[in-house]
Image (cartoon, rainbow, N blue to C red; front, side, top):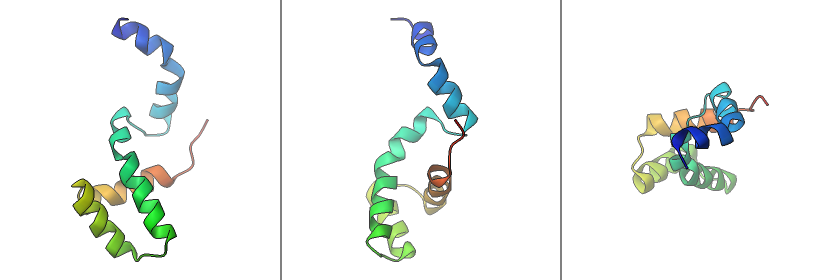
Length: 77
């Protein structure tokens, strides 16, 4: 398969990602966001959760906060 063919097959999904300010590279942060959601749901303080995610995934706090905002917003279909 050529890169062009892959793009054609996934064109609608890629356009939807772009429309909602999501990047394909954001996939690497899915597990971190799942942990954030789980820990917040368990009632942990946000400061503790941010520190845990920063240490566990080697992501800066500012990146984590940006991801929380990005992943938490409703998407336009």
